[in-house]
Length: 563
Ligand SMILES: [Zn+2]
Ligand SMILES: [Zn+2]
Image 1 (cartoon, protein in one colour):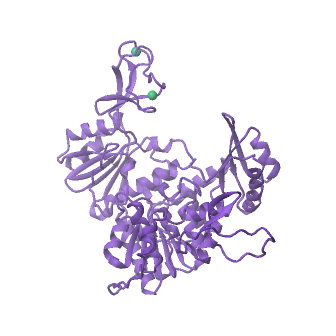
Image 2 (cartoon, rainbow, N blue to C red; image 1 turned 30 degrees about the vertical axis):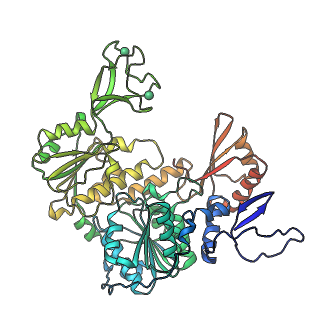
Image 3 (tube, protein in one colour; image 1 turned 180 degrees about the vertical axis):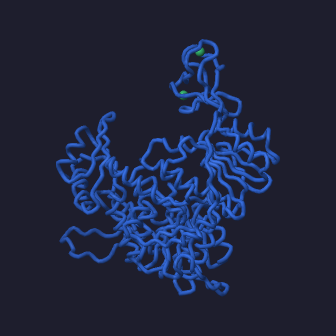
């Protein structure tokens, strides 16, 4: 509806009856904008939780909880009956059976290497057979993850996909879900707010994936919202991942959330054989070459695209650097390009564009493999469609091509330079590297069937490499949790990036003395602070920060920034 507010007409929602009516200050509603009720009491409670947890106005949380309205779709909305086949007998026995679906409880489930889709399917079947509805959240929509495709195939009209499409289609799907026509909703981030009643199961697929974090206000994380919704509605929440986030690993180890492990013997048998070898120049090794000569199908993952990095100018002999920004120059598809600004690479000293290069990267690997492989080699290139790994093909690319592609059973998965991925900056570099390797390694299939993973490393005893070899991520992730705690960012403790004028750091300390970590960085015209808050103190911090916002001492708050 439209309401007058400070002389303007603004959008508003009816939350419910007021506890007390202020005398003489009531104005009339100008216009009812939509006959649709966008949330019920339970959803409002969830949106209030989002507002409190991520320190955003409730109006922002409400506004982002449904797709933008397309008024023309509202009149057409109606409930239609849906026919569905009889559910299959579900087992889930491997993970403790129906106990996985426990009301109000969050569980970390680690599927066997290539069984995420089938495990999810069984869990959804069990849920629907008991008369409840199910919600499955995937981290990306393109290409459609195998887990989503399998569910849509199996449940037909009982299921719908809330992801992608144009504005009209998204709103129509949302209205359709709201009408109660669907028993199963599959979707990306915003679908965590899907207007469903009688939810029995919320399943978060690949919970470690960065796509589950909303990167604009209210900056929520699907994992946290799903768990909160499950608590509020009495549904089960399942976090599914081969290698979980550090947060999930720590919560499971401490018993804060349940875990549903498959028996160790079943895991060992289903895991691929992972061997390590020492990598040589340009990502080669004798072991890799001997495997590639006979492989009919393989995936090779390198950390760099392109053919090589320019090291020295051929004309003047100076170290190569971009004329525009001083950044490193790479050779990609036959041309020199700045890695930082994308400009055509020319020497910052003399302007020449001929360099001595240090070869290495996916293009160089593909060239090398092409000379010895029995099958064609396909290259994943930025901006082009990723070639799907399959029998009769070797695909070379970066971690960006590791997606939920379902069961592939490749003869070889080669991880060419894991050491570089492990020294990347960022709190989550290790967690993400291991999760990506495990998802790719699962494409090799079980060791009894010949599934083989080759890891080229100079640090075979590194805990992340050992996690992959032993198919057990927990020791590494708990070590990562300890490192984060030492760095002042304990897993599970809320983090905020706060923008404001000079002196913001002192201002925050003054109103919130129990701050756990505070890093203040001066920027042009002000200060940016990273603030870590003890979880129990979040309500106090929120009130303190909102006080600073009112006084003009804070201009922007971003929850859970990517660090
Ligand atoms: Zn540049
Ligand atoms: Zn030069």
